[in-house]
Amino acid sequence: MRDTEQQWLERYLDHLLSQRQYSPRTVESYRRDLSRLLSFCEAGNIESWAALSTQQMRQFAAQVHRRGLGGRSVARLLSAARSFFHYLAREGHVTQNPVTGVSAPKSPRRLPEPLDTDQMARLLAIDASDPLALRDLALMELLYSSGLRLSELVSLDMGQVDLRAAALRVTGKGKRQRDLPVGRHAVDALRGWQRVRGELAAEGEPALFVSRRGTRLTPRAVQARLAKWGRRQGIDSHVHPHKLRHAFASHLLESSGDLRAVQELLGHADISTTQVYTHLDFQHLAQVYDQAHPRARKKPPKPEA
Image (cartoon, rainbow, N blue to C red):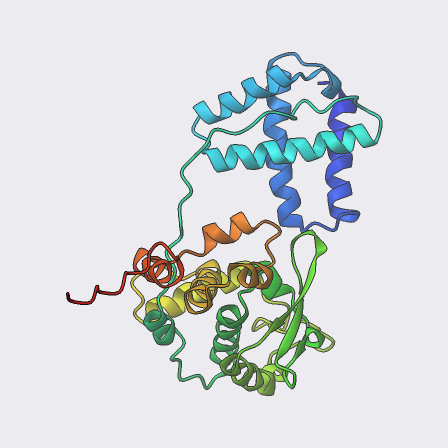
């Protein structure tokens, strides 16, 4: 690849960071994926992005899959490449998108196991007294109460949460905003945290959740704290932020059966994503079917002759 082609890649990554306002972590993920494609082009003596064909893109997808990359990872890589070429076409550097029509190998969709209601109750049964424990209880209650993504949780500022109205506003993927209810237990835990937040927060820090250094809590720190509380509270499986989001969705769906409402609360653009995150056990589904489907209802017994 010529130096100018590598410069187009850097220009695109800068566009994601400065114009699309992607997080540095997300941009780094794009860099890793597109660097794989760059190495493929260099090994195949493909001199420019415009020279890359659809057939070569299929060869690239097959190659990384053979080398151990799973179906979902290949799909993510192709998505990054597709967006990159869309940018190049918009800038007039290429005339076609070679990723169009290229699909990743299918892989089984694994359903993450959520914590059940008893496990959630045990996890949240914390006798919190010191500021860090109060903070951790508040963020866990909020994750479970409102189904937040980890990125949404750590980006929350004080002004985004209205405890009097028991509501908050988050900005999710694609800069889509949504208003979410906050449950009673989460409101109580947040009030407890806000009473002691000033003992940790640096002056002028807007973040709702701060570290012991007074700055915004990082995603990695949240992950570590949840894993620690999971072990301390005797939860058998590994506890992480997404597990609480999944528990929120599963428990809400089991109670309401309203998939569209859960989709809105989770901030999913596609309802098929919600169907992966939330699943009902077969017994519950069978019960709903028996009660609702006209062909499933049992016939009344015939009167005796």
